[in-house]
Image (cartoon, rainbow, N blue to C red; front, side, top):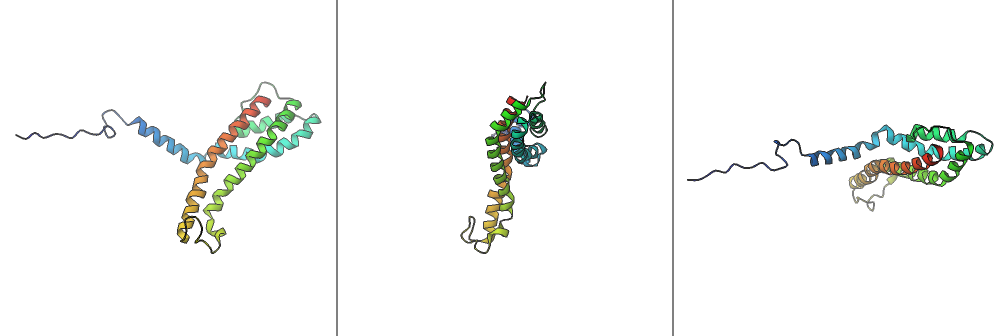
Length: 182
């Protein structure tokens, strides 16, 4: 007499215990990574890069004249980086200290942000700048291969990486602003 075996479901497909939390966790992380370039917080942090450097440079002489530069810098950091409100407004000396110490960091963040985000449209629109010699380009020797390589690696790749790099740089800027302006 032959016995028949019923196949047992695999652990990943076993629905008796509910959805697989490890698989759900991974899909949540991937989705969060992919949607980050399209969130408002990402663009507020990105907008802080070009706004912080000129404001900080302008605040150096103005704070020596007694202007409320600490409040201006704190207001910008509150609006764009989410700096929590402090109990008392920072004085001009704290505004001067923040402007001087944050200037090199703000310059670095501005350069990295500007170059990093400019790579996205530059590579998505690669055929507009490639000219006629695409045989030696990355992804070549065909035009379609070169365009696909530049669009995927340089365009979409930087589109997905730049928000996370911006988040890291903004965290350092936020920490510095919190130390001097809160």
